[in-house]
Length: 101
Image (tube, rainbow, N blue to C red; front, side):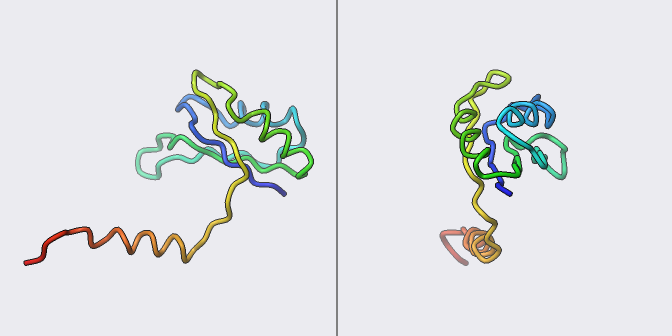
């Protein structure tokens, strides 16, 4: 299973549109468009899982830069989540004050 990151999504893009585009290249397992948990607005990116790496590689090359709903898509293989990397990033940003009382 190959997880593909799809960025620069227009808020009107649907999961069905992504499934159709990537389905041209092979079997698509899941499509997820990420939405803000508070507002429900599309956050501008999503993920497509394809069954075979042999299908995913040409799909990534072909769909990257394709214009969908007036925006060029940015497509690459998704990087795995790093729980400790994510924790470090959020810890770093918490104490952003330059001066202390």
